[in-house]
Length: 85
Image (tube, rainbow, N blue to C red; front, side, top):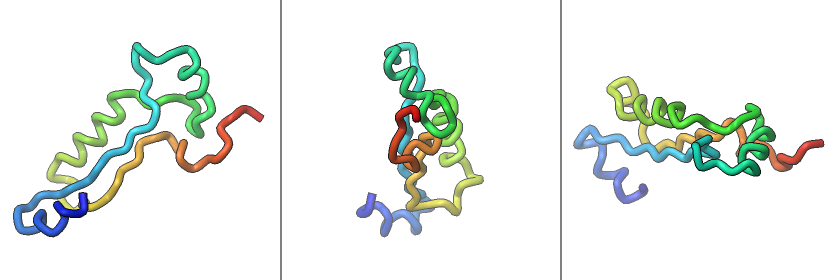
């Protein structure tokens, strides 16, 4: 991402990576479905939630946002121990 940042202002290009966490899909294993319960929001992410964030970043409404990493993980990156207590 770093090499793109100096070029983007003169062309109106914004650069914002997206880092999704666990995504609930039809191929999720029973173990993954169980582990998702311990994410702070209590579930895995839905694909449409990531799509909505990407749609926003691609829209004119986000034209002033650039160089930001958007983590979409339900707070999973905030907790050290995700096991049940």
